[in-house]
Length: 588
Ligand code: SF4
Ligand code: SF4
Image 1 (cartoon, protein in one colour):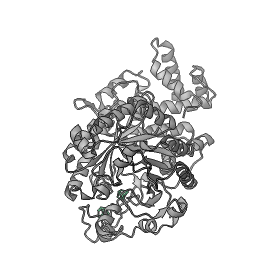
Image 2 (cartoon, helix red, strand yellow):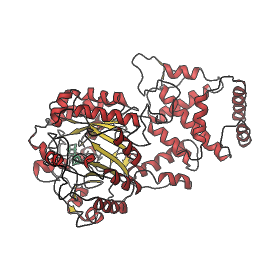
Image 3 (spheres, protein in one colour):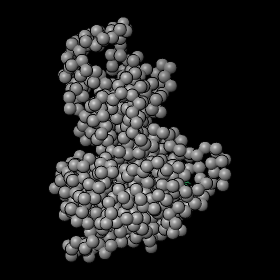
Image 4 (spheres, protein in one colour):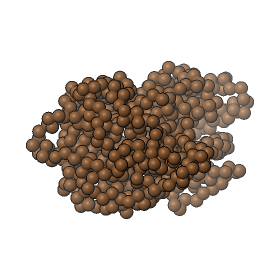
């Protein structure tokens, strides 16, 4: 199968204002920073542009993670972001946060950055500063997070787990959520670069931390993505704890190094991932596509011809082990991952008869295939989606359309499907419009909500109620909201919510879930109104709708809604403005 790069980490510079103990770059960075000198072999601006052109020729909808060193130390960083953005790429910046100012965040936003990753290794400022090798590094990181939040720039907090902070992880996750982060990512050390001399956590601690992370993330479902990086066997752990977990979405084949992902160094060398030092090509001499398509090391990684226990493991298709750890320990990138505790007993697939695989609809980078008609507008909208989720977005929109008896995927259907996906615990994408963080105006996942209790989780003291013969219980707040709705729509709401809760595997109907489904319904209704030729809210739309409906009971309900709205003296301005928003022709 042809491999396409869907994400690239680019270490744009070795220069750094900090000296982190674990840094894999291992440059004499501070000297470089102090003297203000450019590294002699660092790619120039025009070389960066040329490489971006070459990547775009292969995949313009790629995710580009610009990092360093400290990428903000490159004078041309904004030019590079802008240039790549104009090609259609989705840009993220990995930073220690210490150089963030109002001006920088504003510029990042103006250039179209999709999100920022800020490193935070402890809640104790002194420990963080010691790990990062500079005083006030903690203050800098927090200030950066606050600036991002106030300017509406998505950010994720990323923590590297070590012996020193291992007990702090659940507290750091909570802190990240309180800061307003869109995501929290736990990074596991791969002992290369300056981190080579560090004592990594043991395989048992690694395993325990991943189990704890899985438990911790449950509290933040729908609010903040909590994930693990450089820990492919997290998928095995998640699968064992919950084979239906929405966290089981990833590239087919596990660790994406060299298959869907690679790293570019500041000098233009290509490696399989940031923790693998061996260059497989040099962009100063060869085109990106040539390296991507012909490097032997990449071909080997794509072959799935693993060795040791990884070769007989039933989880290899969703895990594959960390190839960098395999290489660091065995000098062989196909060797088993020595940090994994799991012992397949040799019967592997033969015993279970099935190799464990992701569900087809949960595979990143799946082929984009249309199975039903799409409008041009919907296709245009789809063309802006990052490539790794394009196939999934098609599947999601078509599934949503079919479930709702819709025969053609329109932009409205896509919006509704996105809202459906973005706010529930299946949300996997930390940045971008698909997964908006609560708190920012117009950025609440699934659309603005008219109630203040928009946490996905049920409050500890909140009562649950079963209504009628519905199988899924209602949280008290959600139940009260529906009790205030007119009697003729309540049965429909109860029925719809049970149906949608069952479809999405939701265990409690919360107020937030209620808002999400309402917003979806409103988007669909707005789409139909637009089709009828209405661009704003007018009562005549009900007559048009009635004329097109054959079902007598539905006609009666329309009359009841009309009558109710006519009599109502207090208008729900939030709902009206939400409707008007969905009706805008350029709403996307
Ligand atoms: S080799 Fe390891 S660090 Fe690199 S992408 Fe794979 S899991 Fe992550
Ligand atoms: S044995 Fe290898 S493939 Fe299996 S879970 Fe462990 S690291 Fe993953």
